[in-house]
Structures are given as C-alpha cells and as structure tokens.
Amino acid sequence: MKLLKKRTRIFFCILFWGYLFLTFSYMTQEVNAASTKNYSVRVDDSENPTSIEKIVSPGQKFDVNLILTNNTSKKKTLRVSFNTAFTGDNGIVQYNLSVLGKKYFGPLDFNSMVSGRKTIVIQPSQQIKQTYQIKVPSQKFKGAFAGGFYVSESQDSSSSPGNSTINSKKATVGYKSIIAYVIPVTLRESTKIQHTKLILKNVKARVINGSPFIISKIANMTPTIFGKLNFKIRIINLENNRTIQKSSSTGLEMAPLSQFNYHIPLKKKIADGKYLLDLKARSGQRHWHFQNKFVINNSVAKATQNRSKNNTGSQANKLLIYILVGISIILLLLVTYVLGKYSGRKSKSKKDK
Image (cartoon, rainbow, N blue to C red; front, top):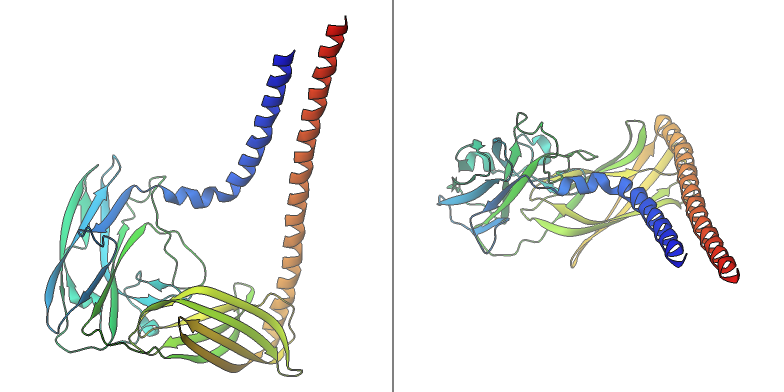
C-alpha cells in the first residue's frame, strides 16, 4: 500500500506540473518557435562575425565575405539586398527597406556602394562563401554612415513549415515575423566625435486601426548612430494644466540622419481639446527636453472611450483566467491530499486486521 500511495502522489504531481507546463507553454510557444535556425549568415571574420565596422577613405574599395549555411535537407534560395539604415517607428535601427522616402535624409545610399550577387541558391547542408565589394564615394562625409546586408529567404523556399526566423520589426507600428538576417555595416572617415542633435518636428493625435495614438515625429539631425535612448512622456491638459497620462520607453535606437514617428497609445478616456506633449529624452550623458502643443479632436476622443471599455473587458478576462487557473490548482491539490489520506487510512485498517 505504501508503494500504491507513493505512486498515486507521483501521478498527481506529474499531472499538476504537466498542467502548469501546458498552461505556460501555450503562452510562449509562438516566441520559442522562432528559435530554430534552418539557415545562417555571418561575416568571415572570427573577431566580429555579426557586423562590420571600418574606418575608410574617399574612393576606397574593399571586399566583404559572407558565409551562408543551409542547415536543412532542402534547397534554399536566399535574396541579398544592400540597404541604408533607418529608424523604424518602433524606435529600432532597421535595414529591411530599399526605398526609404522621408525616413532618411542623408546623402549616401548603401545600395549604390555595393556590388555582388543578390540571389544565392544553397544546396541541402551546403555552406558557401560569397564576396561583395563596397566602394566608398569619392565625396567626403562626416560622422558615421550605416547600411546593412539584408538576407532573406525567397517566397519559394520560405513556404515550408518550421522555418527559422530572426524577428525583424516592421518600419511601422506592429511586428511581423520575417525570415531574415542582417549584417550591419558602419563606415567612418574620421574618429572625430559628432554630438547628436535631436529635434521634435511635430505632434499629432490620430486613430490607427481603431486605436488612438499621439504621434510625435523625432529626427536625428546628425550623422550619428546610437542606442540606449530612453523617453519619459507626460501628456498635459492645457485647460487645467493637469497631467493626464505618463509613459516611458527604454532601449530605443536611432540611425544617422533619420526620423521616425514615435507612437504613444492613449490608454485612458480623454476629452477633446488642447494638450501639451512633454518629452524628455536621454542617451548616455546627452539630454533633450521637448514640449509641443497638439489638439485631440472628437474622433480621437471617441476612440479613447472605446479603448477604455476594451481595456476594462480585457482586464476582466485576464482576471477570470487567473481565477480558473487558481481553482484548478486548488482542486488538484485537494484531490492529491484526499487520495493520499484515503490510501493511508486503508493501509492502517489492513494493519489493524
């Protein structure tokens, strides 16, 4: 009976922990699914295989060797593009667009500087070395210039299940899983330090896909690339000078001579009227403080009301889920306890007999 009692407890412990595992693995399976790498790209450089940083001179030419590896049993077709870096609307330096429009306002274009194959076919389990030549423009440039090799699977080879991904974030708000690798390239003609100048160009309130946002256009006016950029935000009602919402962001980045639309979701019910955006930015020892007035119109105000209702419903749903999970855990523990006690009593009665 002791053996039966022990097995019963072990069984319900396994059931209990299995239940917890299934619950939490359901919430994380989408993230973990992107960790399988079925192809890889690196620089043929043992000291720095993930990026290229180089001091150059006007008109200089140099070669870059990329090592591309197919880790699967199927043939793969890879597309290689040479794109100038820009700052995405998520506040991350990106390399996945060939046409940047107003996102970048610098004089240099990485695509025109690089020559080499743009379509590469790799056989199963094959590794190849591909050489690209970079030609620096004859005209001098100040500060840093940033571009990158953007390597992605073609649509033909990316349709199979289980493809490896590095999650590339879109240039607009939101995320999209794209099968791609980036090899950043940073070029400088001098080691002279450039002091970054940020400006806040404008602030607008907009409704995007039914959700209300404050959109602030922030521009890096200097040829500098940097990270660890933190924002502290206050939205102030100008009628009563009260702060109606606070938020913050950390770990943002900016590409040289680029601008992006920083999106601030409005999470509370807000009336239409005149408001002030107070934005404090910091990166290392550098500080910036911006203030800009804007207007929330009737359509944005209505969207904040709808969002407030949706948030309330969402919180209620989460609370219900937590309650159900808690009840399930308690029931499992009670069943384990009762069965254990029952087995103990049965064993004791047999001994008495």
